[in-house]
Image (tube, rainbow, N blue to C red; front, side):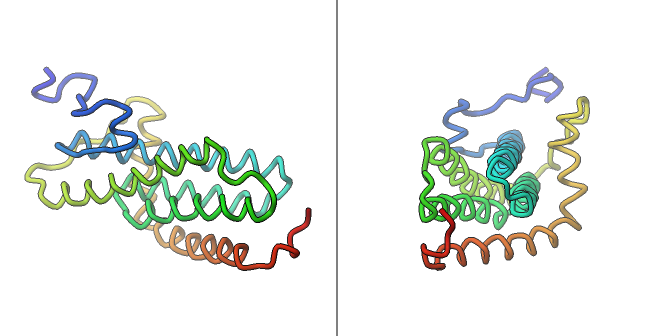
Length: 190
C-alpha cells in the first residue's frame, strides 16, 4: 500500500528533528512535508505575534505583522523562496528592534524560531531544485479535514493573487523594521 502511495501516512525519508533543522529532499513527499511545515511555522509565528502585540496594545502593527507572517507561510507552502527569506529577515530584525527598545529581543523561543525559519529557506531552495527536475506530477493535496484543506488547498488558491499583497506587505514590513533600527534610541518610549 505504501509503495503505491495509497496508505494514509506518507513516509518521510528523515526524522522529525532532522527535517526541522537540516532538511533533505529525496522525493515529492519530502517537498510536501517541508513546505507544509513552513506554512505551519509562519502561521504559529503570526499567532504569537498577534498575542504579544495585543498585550502590548499596538493593534495596527499587530494586524500588519500577522498578515505579513501568514502570507509568508502561504508563500512558503507554494514554494516561494522570497517569502521564506522575508520571514526569516523580518523575525531577525524584530529581535534587534526589541533589543533596541529595551525588551528581551532574543529569547530561546526566538532563537529556535530563527533556526526553523533559516532551515525553511534551505528547504524552499532544495524544493525548487527538486521540482525543476521532477519527472512525475506533484502529489494531490489532502482535503479530508479542515486543517488539511487549510494547509494544502487554501495556499494554492490564495497565492496567485495574494502574492501581490505579500510583496507590498513585505516592503512595508522591511521599511518599518529598518526605520526602527536606524531611529535614535531616545525616540522610543520607555
